[in-house]
Image (cartoon, rainbow, N blue to C red):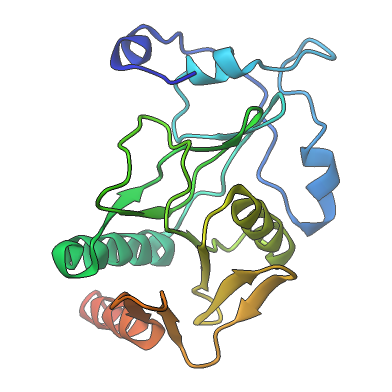
Length: 215
């Protein structure tokens, strides 16, 4: 079920007890924690889609999962990546979306930091077709275990390229069948296309902004 513009306007803002974005030691708890004050009550897909969450949340089989909020580095890198894709839209044959819901199965919705879709991809309110690339930027509270789990879910859904950027380590990973694999050459590419993101370029821009801001 897709959330239309009219549904968004009519959505009832309700207070829910939301499962917190997990740390490494509470990954299992997150998947089973009720999110309402009524014991045993879980949220239906329909209720999730008709409720406005600020910021947006993910959904995992009846559990609304709060996402870790990005701080400065996370937000800046997200903006730079989306801008890079947009500026190269014609040359690369793709376009980017920020924090777009992706339905990976009937009971699970994820919200990647950046999605990259081919120009001929269907336009959907909620993506039900795999984008070409999803990019996740780690926040300080995120763990590699959780990032690897999400990467596996994206790959199983059929997304060809899953990229994870770690601002604290200034490194990048790509999703593979066994989890996450560090990108030693510092370049994220899509073979057979001109798409290329140099990790060093991202952090050079970040450093330039930091220096002008006095940090």
